[in-house]
Length: 232
Image 1 (cartoon, rainbow, N blue to C red):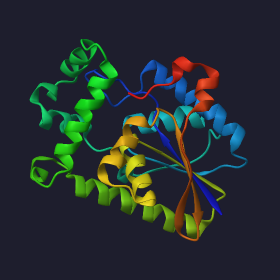
Image 2 (tube, rainbow, N blue to C red; image 1 turned 90 degrees about the vertical axis):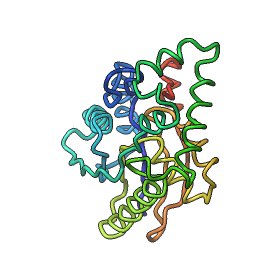
Image 3 (cartoon, rainbow, N blue to C red; image 1 turned 135 degrees about the vertical axis):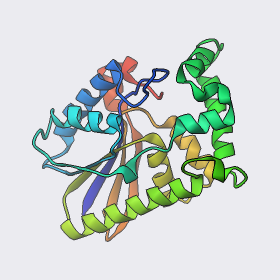
Image 4 (cartoon, helix red, strand yellow; image 1 turned 60 degrees about the vertical axis):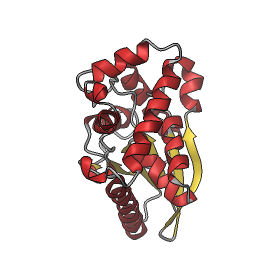
């Protein structure tokens, strides 16, 4: 029986010219993640990572602490949706990440402001009215993630490793959790906002079907330093 750990990447560089790289705090999260994996995994896992830089960085840094010679199977099917485009299509002011970061910093409650903006942007993206405006529509993204999950389960059923680790993003983890738990769209994306950086969502593979064991495990970071808990 295989246990699958779906890991959200460490904190990326919000508001920077390139979001797709770990912040200094994200690098620390990845290192501590690796130390934690070293404690809980009794043998080398089958490893998959999205092709985004933040996925690869998180994988490399964490694996250096536990399985430095492990092979990483890179698969872009595990990449996040284009959240910057989703923001920008909702409000063109957000086309430049620096503008969004400035607007957020000016709010009395920055987290709530960003959460509300995200919710409205996602609502627009997931409606049928504007699908052709996006490089990847909501149905396309959902299908991509669900296919990635099924293909992974099929592969793991064949090779039967004790563990598998997948480095990906919050939106991807939310969609796969939403599929397994049969959640509607609003509830699916409410998970996205709750999933912490470098957190673990765990599934057990029964035959070729995933069963969720845990969602959004991040207490190992909180024990190390509460300041390491981030969601953006």
